[in-house]
Image (cartoon, rainbow, N blue to C red; front, side):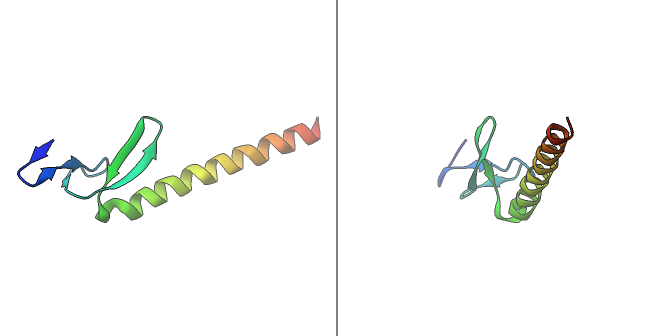
Amino acid sequence: MEDGEGKVERCVFCNERVAEPARVPTVFGAAAVCRSCWPRYRQHVQRAIDLFGVQQRTAVAADQAA
């Protein structure tokens, strides 16, 4: 999206227009996150890391038990 000042994107969380977003990786490519939603993004990523870690430990424990 273009604005009079240049390229303007929308935050993936709040959908607000952001002139200078943080670019974050997603499974669909890079996405824009505004500064006010940045803590929310970090929390989202931490939950995914925690979930993957739990699944990883469960798989290792299952292999060891077998």
